[in-house]
Length: 242
Image (tube, rainbow, N blue to C red; front, side, top):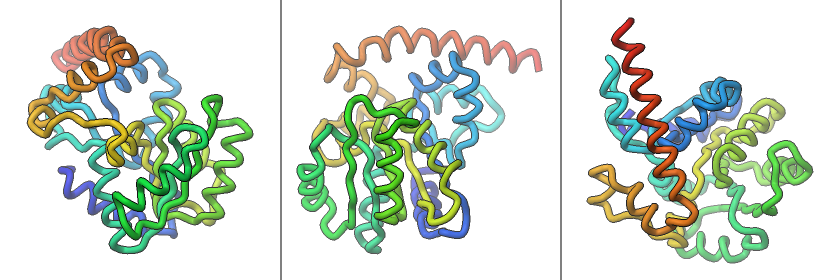
């Protein structure tokens, strides 16, 4: 799908309470490399209802196939579009993520950025695990809030494991739509500055992020990037042989 199709489709899904929770994942280069190293997790990840390419290299790589992706659809952009539409339609959202104890600060930031958006927030500790006691607490709070959309901002793979656990365990009174969106909330609320639009369009957002947080991201964009090219070469050989 193109971005406008994706956002419209997801908003429709957010109003559907007559089906299991729909899960959205947005793979980038780092995700592809890590999934390649974890076959069991890769199989689980593939059961998501919507898989959108967050990274331009993933879109470029799809050109090797007979069914290339039309464009990039990022978690950061989906977060903004869906929050705006939920504010207009008075649909509640739930945020699982943020720094511990940051709930009130985030509530205030949402009120400024998306006036009228009904939002509930749970910021777990840094020791959060998808199968631990805090996850049990999170599920209880989500159920009490009854949101149309759950945004999980915990980073991969915690956010995906929690999303799939929620869908597996909650059969009634479920959240219609769950998005695993990493740092999307921080960009949306201005806590982190996103790359200029021109850099996003030419596929250089990764360079902006690396320059902004070199100590944290250097391995993702150097070591993981080189491994991604190895995966591409392997897949290209497979395509030639088929």
